[in-house]
Image 1 (cartoon, helix red, strand yellow):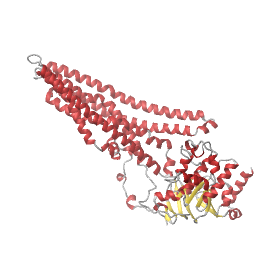
Image 2: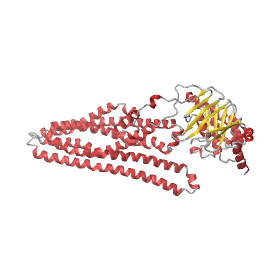
Image 3: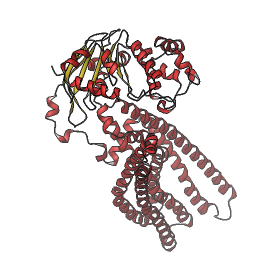
Image 4: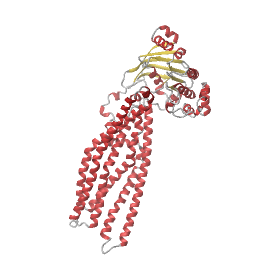
Length: 604
C-alpha cells in the first residue's frame, strides 16, 4: 500500500561513495564546480586566455626594445632613426596590448554578469523547489542571502580576479623564461627571494579561507535578523520588544563586523609582504648587476631591460594579496551557493506526468504519514476519501496536523509513507502544470504581491484578460467591494498586501483562485477578527467559489464546520472522527469538545 520504495543500492552505499558537502570541499573543487554550474564563464575562456597571452607578450616588447635602444641607439652617436623607429614600434605594440587586454576584460565582464544572473535564477528556482520541511528548517533570511549577497561576492573575482590570475600566471611564466635568456645569474636571486613569499602565503591560505567562510555565515545571519525585525516591526513596537530586538540585530551586525575585520587583517598581513620582497629583489638586481654585470658580459642595456623584466615578474606577487582576497571571498560565496543548490529536493516532478481531468476532483489518502525533517511524525496513517464536488471541513486543535495534511494535498511536500490520490492519480505522477491549474490553495494570511489588485488576481491564470478579472469579481459578488477601494482594481496592495486588511487580502486571494477554475480548492480560513460586512462578504465569496468544486477547508469558524458535507477531525496527527456536524456533536467525542469550546468563545 505504501508508495515509498527503498533502493537496495542506496542502503549498501559506502560513506566514501557519497558526494562531499560543499563546506568540506577544497578550494579547487569549489572553483571547478562553480565553473561547471556557470557555462557562461567557460564559454570563450580559451579566447580570453589567448588574447591575455597576446597582451602580456605585447607588454614584454617594452623591456626588449629598451635594451636595443640603450645598447644600439647610442653607439657611435645618437641614431635618431633607429631610436624613434623602435619607440614607434613600442608604442604600437603597447597600444595593441591595450586593445587585447580591453577585449579580454570586456568579455569577462559580460560573461561574469550572465553567469551571476544564471546563478541567481538557479538559486531562486531551487529554493522554490524545496519542500516545506526544508524551508521550515532554514531561516528565510539565509536563503535570501544565498541568491543576493553571496552571489554578489563572486562579482569582483569573475570580473577582475579571474583575469588577474590568468594574466599573472602567463606573465610570470613568460617573463621567467625571458629572464633566463637575458641572464640566468640575475634570475637566481630574484627567484630565491620569491620562494619565501610563496611559502608564507601557503601557510596563511587555510586561515584566510576559514575567515572568509565565517564572513559569509555572519552575513547570512545578519540578513536574517534584520529581515525578521523589519517584517515584525508592528509586533516589536506593540509588545515593547525594541530593546531585545535591537540587541539581537546589533549583535549580528557586530559578529559580521568582527568576521570581516578578521578576514581583512589576515589579508593585510600578506599585503606588505609582496612589496617588501619586490623591493629587496629589485635592489639585489641593481647591486648584483652593477657589481658583476661587466664580468658576466652584461651590457647597460641588458641590465636595464632586466630591471623592467624583474619588475614585470615581481609585480603579480605584489598584487597577489588583493587577488587572493578576492578569490577567497568568491570561494566562500560559492561554497554557500553550492550548499544551497545541493539541498535535496524532496518533491521530484514527473516527466512528462499525467494531466488531471477537468471539473471537480475526488481525493483519496491511504495511510499517509509525514514528518518535518528528522522530527517526530506529525501525520500518522491518515486514510480519508472525499467525493467530487464535496465540501469538507478539516478541524482540530493547533498542532493536530490539519494544515500539514492540506499542504500535502497541494504537493508542497510528499508523504514519507502512504499514498495521496487526486482525480484517481497519485499526486507524484501528476504533471506540475496540470497540478497547479487543478489544485489551488488559499492560505490563511492571503499573501499578495506588491502590485495592483488586478495584477494579483491575474496571477491566478496565465493569459487572463482584464475582462476575465472583472468576471471573476462579479462571479463572487465582490464588484461593489473592489470599486470601494481608493483606485478600484488599480489599487496597489503594498508589500505582502499590507495595505489591505486580513479579510480584504483573503477576498483578493479567493478571486485569484476563482479565475484559475480549479477542480480542488483548499482553503485556510482567516482567524483574525473582521468587521461584520467583511465577514459576510467572505462567507458569500466562499459559498460561491466552492460551487461545483471539491473544497477542503481548514475551518476556524463554527459556521464553516456546521455547513460542511463532512468533517474530518484531526488529533495528534490522526483522523480520529469523521461525519456531519450533528452526528459528531451527538457522539460526544473530540469534535464535541471543540464545539463546546467554540460555543464558549462565541458567547463570550
